[in-house]
Length: 519
Image (cartoon, rainbow, N blue to C red):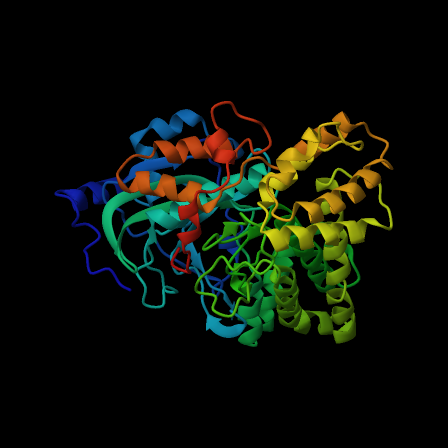
């Protein structure tokens, strides 16, 4: 829905202030731009400036993301910082643009989409590898499809926190640098507050970027895009007999490993459309996501998903389907190299093995099993059946499992924290006896195994109710909880004194929270 408000009219003198800011370039010598995507020819994007945001205020900033760019944290204290990342003051060297792409949404071809509310400022030569800086919520673009191009504070807080939480969990993801807001009304189901989120990524090229040119029959630009991705991000593939087939193979395996890691921490993306899939295997576009509380294989975190297409259990299958869409888009290039459709199908058929191997390895490690045994698959399946039947809290169960010893303690205290989470304790005890027998085959001591488990089974994840508390405070102008929650989530494996509430079972009211595509 379009906002009827003039973007400059929310405060006296706002228009003059914004225009004055836009006349001055922010010259930050730390940021050396090298805008490779902007050097692609016409047809990949539209160059334009951000729509000004009146009187922006800084909601949150990620110190870890600042470090990625080599930015001094003192920058965030400067008034200019909020102006820059609201889109009001251009950065010297930036070349703002909105990229075009297409995609399948909920399994249906949606045609042209594009950066409807995002603006790529440019690419920075960063200390640990180049990063693109993108504003999300910076106003209308030619791809907005009639919408206002704005993001709201509610969903922007969620994406800011989850981007940095996923990075701390070691899961490939886009990053969140900063979040600003303004007293500008944005109309969704209700009137909400405008916000602009600054995201970082090596690239925002999506499966849908390739689908766009395939659907248009534009093989020349399809080849240019593939050549760009290979040269910039996967240079070793250029030496392959068919670099385009090798690019597909890389995307298949990267995506399989990514989704295996999602499943291992109980993460639900919510909107796995092909335009939300990164060709580099990164978690992209956080919308109605969620982490599992009670384990439910059929959990659907997005209440716009009426059919459950993107349920937790379906994520691997949907990711595979999306890879087939990418394979179809690359087919004109693969065929041109002489390998043909059969070779592409053979590459796509590798998905199942790649995902299952990565997921099996991740779950075995969560259980503290360093060695592989034939019985592991049955042990793991029996556990997940039990967790599903009793809706056991996913995060706390695996964290508490590190306390279990290979030989039961006389008072059974080592397993009490896990037993307290289940309903059918007899069934759990039967599984526990199998688990103890399996632990007896391990070479590591109980203490060594527990330490290893606690390094990869988080204590803290971004549960929906924690995000909701931070959002409610922020709506009242108090951003303290956003910063506090960020600090907790950036150390997900460490016990943090005084932060026990962040690792507790969710309150009853958390079950009433609903997230949709507007989230």
